[in-house]
Length: 374
Image (cartoon, rainbow, N blue to C red; front, side, top):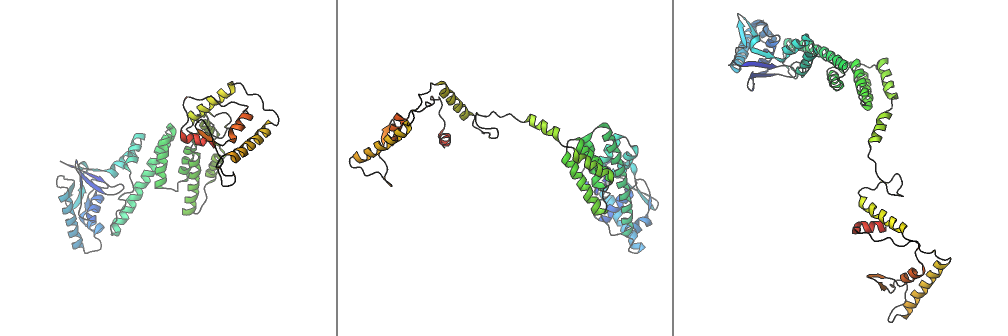
């Protein structure tokens, strides 16, 4: 025989195990099944059930509506005898139905850490969350049962949080405290517990934000400030500086090898090959013998001779125009590069103090070559 499973915490769902969820035709038939389930096995007179859900109509019409709702429930639960009748009373058979709210209460009463964890997992929200029936007697009953189960959930989560704190399960304690905050954000001791957990875990910013959230919710809902103990804890966390974590992060930072002369704040990204070429070229230049120093005034005479040579070339070239603005100077060919005639003269009379670096085996690409020439 199939077993009925009712989920009442966080909403309403009926399911025949094993199988899919079953659909009841009306909201009042769902409300009737939920009322019979808390607690299971308790018998309720028909007159009481009729007045609970159909109190705004005549007694005969209310009893007729009750019969129709019972017929719809029994039709949906055709493979089970979950609903039974004892004279003029109705009840749910405890052995034929599994109810999450009843299991939750049993685990909270058990009180062991494992039972409290299972109870916290079962409590997925308020009793029949989002469920409403326009009948004042049923709404009064639902409000009372919802508040009773919520208080049990707060008690269970508080005990579980104390146990997790005691055994050092910090991450689980944070999650439990957050669930407590969801159920009752006005619990200032839980705000303090969260602040301590965050601070001990190195999450100083989260601890400070938790205090601001506490200030906001207490001011908005109650118009009060946090307790002196909460303020003192905030000041204590505020005085703590994350120096140790910053030093650890600095020690773990990757070391970057810098080229000579690049300073301490400039890092070249993706230039390892080019830096190697530059180091080889500088090493080759340093190992070669230096040229004799340039005599005083040689640079001035060199530049003067170069200008004179350039002027003579311009005047003596047959068919050439006078060098001036807008006219390009004649050129001479040196190897495969075309250069102005003054460049060889400057090269001859102004020897370089440092010879050009020796050639390297692998030249730079065209893009990098242009960049280095700038």
